[in-house]
Length: 61
Image (cartoon, rainbow, N blue to C red; front, side):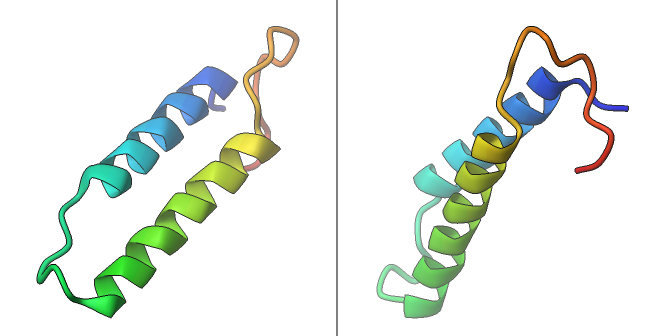
């Protein structure tokens, strides 16, 4: 079982890493698409599994 806030922290780290990662090469459209998809996924998962004081555990991720 994983605590909600552990998931939140990991997703925040992923989102921050993707947002700050330099594109290589800078003009690469594929890198931008992959980074943008990762940011969208992390954001949507954070919305789906918000941190609340009432939830102790998440059964499925």
